[in-house]
Image 1 (tube, rainbow, N blue to C red):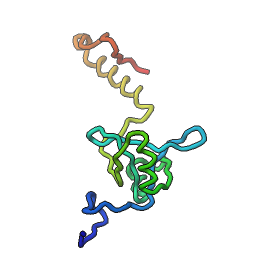
Image 2 (cartoon, one colour; image 1 turned 180 degrees about the horizontal axis):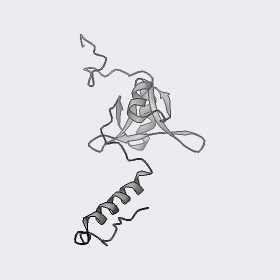
Image 3 (cartoon, helix red, strand yellow; image 1 turned 180 degrees about the vertical axis):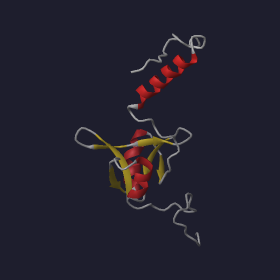
Image 4 (cartoon, rainbow, N blue to C red; image 1 turned 90 degrees about the horizontal axis):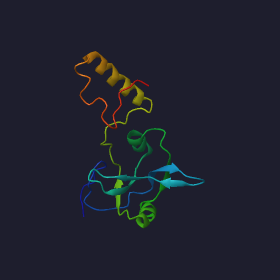
Amino acid sequence: MCLFTYEDDPEPEERVPAGPLYVPVRPGTGEVVVRLFRTPLGVRTAVGFTRAERLVAVLGAGQPWIRLSEPALRALAEPLGVASLTVDPSLTAPAAAPVGAAGTVAATAAAAAAAAGPGMRGAGAGAPGTSARAV
């Protein structure tokens, strides 16, 4: 048995139930669906947070959630082949670009190509699947 307890210990010595978790969900057609994530190694995992503030810090204030116990979350994820449960994960991926940023990226690439002059435009120009036009 562990003599000391540390509130923020990411790997406790003993597995104890985390208590009710704040579980991220996505809206369905009349019900909610538990969101599943991937670990940095690509393994699918269910995710739960011990406090709503931690969920908001990682996934944002607009992320809907429900309260579930650890066994209930495991029971929902198990039929989907998900055996892993991550409690209080931190965000490790870079922030996604805003939805409207795609046009900005294309406009920036077009401006850079125009500024480079005619000698530099041939590199990659017209290659299949590429486009550098302003939207």
